[in-house]
Length: 434
Ligand code: S3P
Image (cartoon, rainbow, N blue to C red; front, side, top):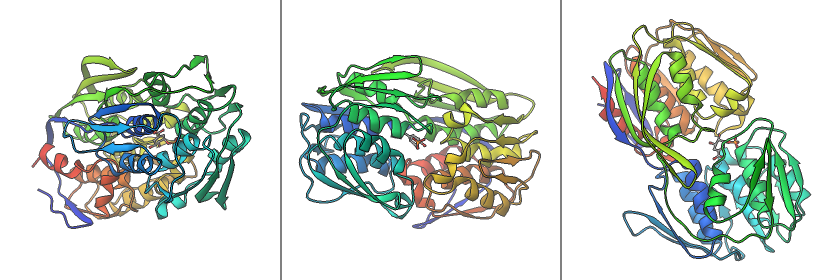
């Protein structure tokens, strides 16, 4: 058992990792459904909406913009949209810790002829926002940042379509441009050289929008209106990642995760697990509003964990899963090398620096690079005091490393897990065999 205070969680080593769980809805998809429901005409009912704080920041912003959000039904959240016209908000739009809310919402509201202020917590105020200011100002919005960061002031109004080549692989930037393009004059085109998660494309179509993809180019005609939908959000594969990696650590693990989102632009982790020496069975695959959902069973193949080199497009596709892969790397035979992952330095924390600091605290050897880490295998770790840096994925990644360490691990700032996965420590206790 682990014990919890407001910010400290003790995680003890486990003998094995077994059981079956259904996880709350995907954070990325929940954000998109919340925002498009807020803009659409009619009442959208969203089942299995994320329980994480971040997508609820998106819902609160929708309320501030004139949508109605009803959380009173236990089976779904109902969002009644503004039918294409957001009102002037009389309070700043508070995005909390959520980069997705701030960046995607900027694109959604920029076509509306009001002045909006967007704010966030300390971590969000450190994150780069020039990446959305650039395309949105090319479209005609006037956007003020403070030295490239939030608070953001958006002087919105009618926008013109643009042709945009995304300079960094970012689904949030892509989404900001698509959401603005949806409401602009003319057809916006967007190219991405590394294909990022495509939840926005599926969500836009689900809400009735037209958009097409040819090769690496997306085309979205402007002046489109959206209609409400009923949808169930697939379970969050990036939350599942922590438990999938935990299952790899023990020879006799057996983990079953129900109704997990398996969108191919998100599921590179499953290939990595197989490459490391896990066996995965996927059962009951279905498609809802363009999103694949399936049940995943994972076991560790006999013979222990191999290693892997992660770089190029794979780093972008695995960006949210890299912290937990790095945290289990010392327990592999050949280690894990990560490159082309500079974006990790501008997430909720500098994830490269924090992973390095916390792995070293547990006794690991490693080399840190500007864009990644080399973590040799065959290392034994010991329990230590872990600094989450108030970053949810760091808190959870090191709780998984703790399961195979010698002695207890203290996760400081453990409450950060609630940003994406409030049930994390309860499930961790339930699945860890001691
Ligand atoms: C997200 C995209 C990624 C990811 C984030 C969620 C999304 O960010 O790290 O957790 O929902 O589009 P970037 O767009 O900054 O890569």
